[in-house]
Length: 418
Image (cartoon, rainbow, N blue to C red; front, side, top):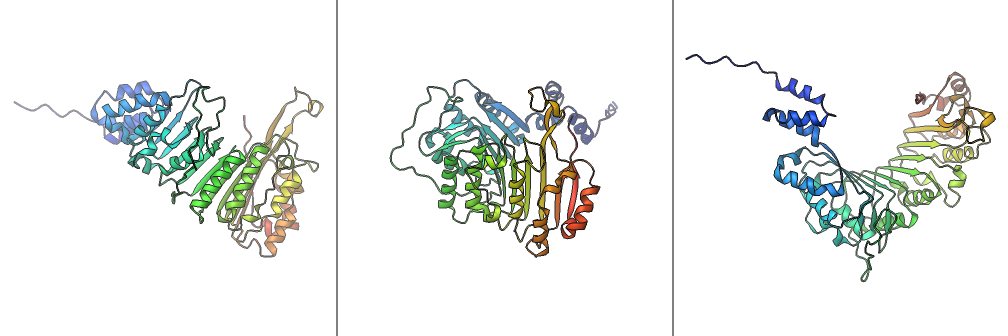
């Protein structure tokens, strides 16, 4: 009896490519997972490589992984957040169980996590798992910690390379309880001195900090300094949205500015920059080892000579005396009023737009030119200025008055939105 001819098959690479087009269609991916076993790995990658869950859903995820352990190998990014409902302390323990199931978890984003004493985090009493060792990027957003709980929490990720702390409430003893926490969350009384373990994240290269209260950041800096006197992070991103952010930024730069290689500062305050920093002195001269500096400034005023923020920006430019600085980027957005007759009316059409290149002549380019000519900025190779409009006039001005600076300047058009 003759054998039946082999049925034609598509190459596996082509099947994978076809499934790739279904990345955003969960129902179609579920159907594909039932076709044959060879389709399952590609389908699982698209369904489980990036997960976004509520904390209350972690238990369901844990049950799913227990029934199908292979799924855990596809998870590379996990985002968890808490809703406005009641907070359950057992969520922390469940999370610890989940994290230990993910050997390839690279990025972990947590928001609205509350941790008081260290024993409230079940993960902290467990040995470092394969999942925690794999995490390279950690974001903590709108979370509440005591400094002891935060330090123990970070020790759970020994190979962490990038850390973002945004809108964190950090206290010495009891956690700050805001409107996001339930009213019956138990207060925590410290018994004796607070024991804080030493910092051991030697792989950390980048930190991003924003909306941290000065007291919380001071505790964090004290902990870093005491446990790791020679702490050095290569890249730091600081965000300033109000005067509450100004002092924490200055605290960090005063403590660790001389150890930074890259610095990215983002200013987006509704008040002028001098008013934002009225209670804090921003001094970039501490950052003598900088190799790259990015200044992104959003002004809620028109970019004219009478703008109160212009002298502040020029002061920052005069502080750029970094011998190793090779790259400087400057981006300025300003309040572009479309109708001057209604500029002070609630009906005015006002929005932030990139500054026009022709208006940038009011910046203190002379000092930067002097730093270049005098050999202070000897390593400066590229200055990128972002804006909009024609560059001919400003380029001619720079070539005529500041030839050394003009040789490294590059004008980059910022596309209009909308």
